[in-house]
Length: 139
Image: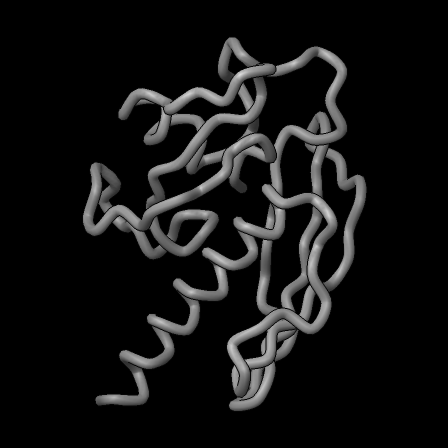
């Protein structure tokens, strides 16, 4: 689960995680914290412990928030499209949920999320998924 206020910007190759492909967004990411009024570039320990691993716990979080974490999962995948399920969680309970759809043929989103942060995380998740699955097809 990634922090819902995290706006990923660049994939971290390797990083400080023992198994980066098991991270909520399929890899570690650098990015920006959008929890405060002014976006902040998190420190490395915040990226490692909070931003990439969810359950919003940093000091910048607003008390009144819709979600503490975002979960993604591949609901369906083919050569032409990828359907992603997402759930926003608050206090370890599901809240908003839905499906997003990516066209693998055109490299564009057919059904996107209205929140730019959630959409960026979905994009990162799909990129990491496509990278992993392309490695398997080369074997």
